[in-house]
Image (cartoon, rainbow, N blue to C red):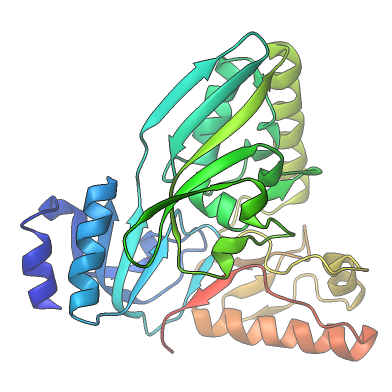
Length: 304
């Protein structure tokens, strides 16, 4: 690790490379042990250099965005965490559309606000999603009947040989909460989004409506990793959890939200161990009562 660190500080800003960094600082659920190395990546060149250095030493690594759908185990991460903070942006306006070419590290909330300023419609659904663009595209994030697949034209990504490749919307293989990037090692570095010109008042009203619905229906006042479980193909997971009587059920500091049963929240002092035990308990109860297998929407990394 020390050799990698010494090599990295020759090329990356020293303040962007942290040793023994608590992942509680970098996940929306505020849980997780320490990462041996935590590296903030601001350019494609930095990403290439960091990956080359890490791979030469056969050092394990993980790529994250805003850590908004991530659970890091209590033992932390033996290896490096690369946080993508590439935020370069270009815009092109036509009579009926606005095209954004933007880095994968830009927060979705910021991007949705920019779309509002440009009277561009199509990102209203994302105004309360706390992730980055890259993470949202990788998992085809969505809300209120809209998904990233509806607005993505193309993405540039770095493959495992450090080649930059471009894929079209179709080549993303978008599906419910997944894409080609949930199955391969490509790292999204930028994407092009196409939004239609709209009425700024209507766009703002829709965003306010979505924000209000999120406040009313989701436990945004407590740390979470967003929706813990995926929707079923023929059932609503949160409804089944609710019908098992599990709202408010708690193990340690982890609790099934009383506001939305699909969310497991951190009451303030939760460990990953609590979360994992509660997840397993919820899965078991739903399986026993309804015969349904529920799947995680969040990603789990690290060591016990």
